[in-house]
Amino acid sequence: MFQTIFRPLKGLDSRMQIKRPTSALKPFPLLPPLILMLCFGINVALAQPQELLHKADSLAKALQYEEANATLSAFIKEYPQRKYDMGEAYFKMAGNHFHLGQLESATRCNQQSADLRMAIAPDALGLNEQLSACIHLAEGQYDTALEHLDKARLYPFFDDPLIPAEIALLESEIQEQRHQYDLALKAARSAAEIVEIVESSEAPPLSGIYLQQAHLLAIKQDWTAAVQACQASLKIEESPEANLLLGQALLADKQPSKEAKTALAKAQQRGSTAIQIEAGLALAQWELENGKPYGVLAQTDRISALINNQQGSRGKKAGANQPHSNQYYTQAQMKYLSAQAYLMETSADSHAQARSAVYQGLDALQRSEKEDTLLQAQLLEQGLMALTHPETGIQAFDQYLEPFLMAHSGERQLFSSAHQEGLSSIHFFETPSAVLGLYRDQDTTFMRPLERDMIRQTLSQLSAGTPEAIRYIAFQQLFGPFEARLANKESLELGFPEKWPAQQILQLPTTPEPDGGIWPFRHRPKPVRKRFGIEAPAMDY
Image (cartoon, rainbow, N blue to C red):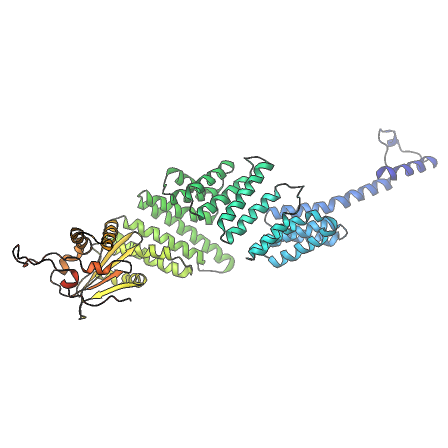
């Protein structure tokens, strides 16, 4: 192009015998002003659009998506004739809107990009299909997102052979949201295979793919495989997310090891506030597993400070003074760990602190509006355990016991003697890791823990039918902690969990009475039902 323009002008210059300036004696003659102006104008015309696009890319990388879109809008307005670049600009705008959560705008810009590319660069439409899948995933339209991914796979992606791996990883995320965890794991492994073929087994993208695999394996509670996937991710690239999941998986696999603590400490030091909070909860669990209650409380104090800082930042920016529901849920988890730490101590004060932590945890869980029956049961269990301390006064039961009893009532079996005022009662409660008995009469209320494993084994034997010797042992296991209170009682109310063999328990032989006679004329021990005159049939309440 430059030669075509230059030669005629040079010939014209020769015929007109224009005197050259002295600078013409230099090796490269001075170009005529018209040529210089023309060349300069072309360079500017070429450079300025690209500079705008590069600037938009830089702003997007800096997470300044609104500024990036303003730059792209300026490009589209200034250079409407550059159709190919317009397609790119609209596509970039769509991605920025997506990151801002502006899904309608993202869809509109993505379609404008696709319309331009349809005529100019149809091979690039695979990228538009991929972005459409992302948008529909964010909208919760999982089947539609998968349809767009299937369309995206039809394009070659010659310019970037790693895009098929991105598509496979996106499919993994979609299948995860559909709770199809096996399909999600299969897609994540497919993504890893593509990267290994295209690049190598140590390519940087594999770090995130292995982390996705670890996440899915953790959901499936395959903790050993999750640990291995985290370690593979960290081998390629250190990240707070992988360290956090590694520590959590090791704890879930009953390995409160030094490796777990080291990984969690790294996550806590280098991660975002959310990761620091999660790492703090896991470290508190690590301290608990290793019998260090003060370490638990130190971590919960640190978590509280992080939550308070979050509240302060949110309040300044949005005028909010209350923690988000997720923070309430975190507080509930934190109070559960604190309660366990307090119960590792033996003083009455520590049990009072445990009861207080449980009460606060249940309140936080309710405020979070999150349905987590397991955490609720765990909190209630710790509350019941706190009430078993020998020095716990009756007044403690008035404040804390009723919510526990209501939560543990469910479908229970109730038996009693003839109803009368001031009837003594024993109610048994079974939680995931404890069996407890609650005694009440007109003057006394107390809770006692029972040997959970032995009780479960004995109840299983009672259900199957056992020798009489086992039945004597069963009575002592269940009623031994309350026997002194029962010595002079003639009536009793009993409550059992729904799955307990209540009829067999009512037939257990009680301790022989002192005036039972001289052998061989001694009276046989009376069964529980007869000893307390329990004739009422089973009832649900």
